[in-house]
Image (tube, rainbow, N blue to C red):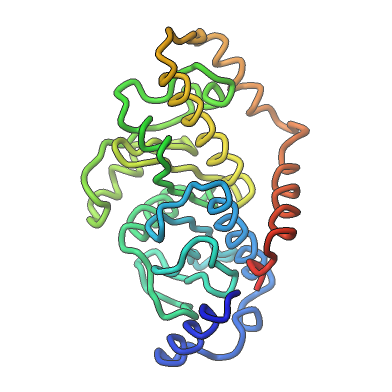
Length: 269
């Protein structure tokens, strides 16, 4: 954590009467682990250049029966996020823990609380505005069966039409209906949404969805005729990725944490 961020957290938290000792000492071990995992996810999204300054968001449900979730403080860059700096809110948007005093992005609350309300099986939600993701979201045909990465999502991705900046609570019902049973969604003319049963699963989901979009834009930019795989082949690929006990599942998260620990382990603080 940078000295500047420490000072912001100290001054803002004290001003709001929220500074009551270190966050780690005030939360359960399970919540702290979720905070560390979520902070790591923010750093990974920053490292792989999926950020849009301070304007996108990643959330994770806090373990327990209360239906609280963690999200970024509104004003921090993703490479500044730490476990302690995450804001804890409830499904109505009430702030329960905010060491920074910065509050949360309203659009982030609307989108993330919509998913957390409707899908208790999805513990983590990632929303991005990457160039490739926005570009594919603006294409009428959506994600095409032109790469192994994209075929992972064959008939397993939802679409939600753009309604403007997501500030209105009444959009939540449509977000929920469009997402349905899926764990990935393209927000048309807007960006990407990927979810998971935990933080590592959601990271895996957004990483490959982003890569699929990058591959599509790169292939289209070449100007040649695209080789579109059949639905049968795409379904085979999607089924292979979804098979229970897939040996690679989880390994990439452990490897990603090793990368972060070499670059900057302050996400754990």
